[in-house]
Length: 487
Image 1 (cartoon, rainbow, N blue to C red):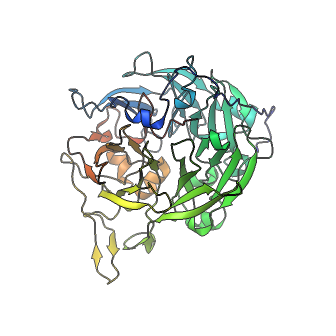
Image 2 (cartoon, one colour):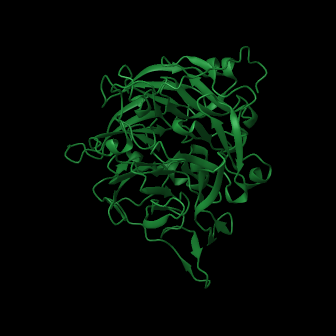
Image 3 (cartoon, rainbow, N blue to C red):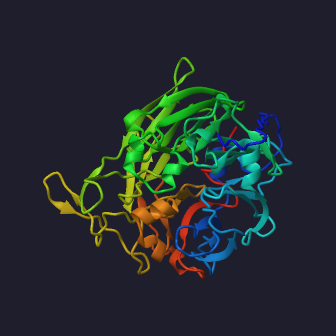
């Protein structure tokens, strides 16, 4: 941990689930599925790493098919500084606060992965044109907690906001942990008990009825901010563990070693039904979806639920290419799981009504390194080579690979962007910095299963006024299946 930390504070949260009147969000995940159709979506957009000296920004995209500006960026809110690397986002209040009538889903929380700033955006005054409300400065966070490289934020039923941080200010993983902000976005301290920080940080999800929070592990910022080097995996600079905490008091109860089948576990989600004691984590490097679950004795265990085999390739940096599962989500009714293979280029849909035995129901190719026209060829078992057919959308060749995804409340529309992290974008898909990201929409068959690209929707972030940008995470003003947690 940084040695110049003058005051290390430890915060605490109340359970906050005792209210009974209506607050933000929905009472249940199934009620949320009947919520209004999305009309706007907020997208974090990045100029960091593109060579353009412009601030990152929050884009508002019109996703209402009846609107004259459908599939267009209708507003851009630039942040005041350069080099932040906006990444993920969360709300000040969500369905976890549904029982609190005083709570209001108003502020979008934008942690900056590189600078350590946390921007608070007011979306209530004008949802189409959000405005900057507050900046939580990294110096304040470092002084009070020693934490830096903020990533995932989730609102809590108490009104506080919990943010995972991936290291100390020098990029050491040993300094990682969880930042607690109060409802006015003041630093309360660290959430986890002293001495209970994880080995690595990344994403997290909590399931209050089981008094459990589980977090995942990317790697040391000093390693991943320089690009991906396989040697760093061998050197122990990337994670392979899940960390099981007591909720809400922050005691590390168990560490699950996923072994060589679970290298770099990134996004993690419990099933939405708050009574369920199972969930999934996407392990990027080994391209496995791992299911975690509570056992009869109350401890937690894990097993590989879905495997994506590496593809033998020609004309690439390695003889085999992993799929690289970098994002996934679960539909609000817990029926379907969707994930992306950022390098291979496909988006998949699985039926998980039996979580132990997922069944592939849909698959669509929307980019990747093995698409026709690429110098990279896949090698079949008989030695022949092939490439995937990837359609053009509105005359545009699809760039990069599918990365972040967001699902409509009713589960019928899946939105896809293609930027992972600027340094890695430049390493694996260098054309993105030159030509920019894009955003797609995939139609979902929720009865029989199946995925199909919507040819009428294409947001071209290569045509932005300040030049091509990277597009990353997406949020609806009313909440979604990756922001809202039920208690």
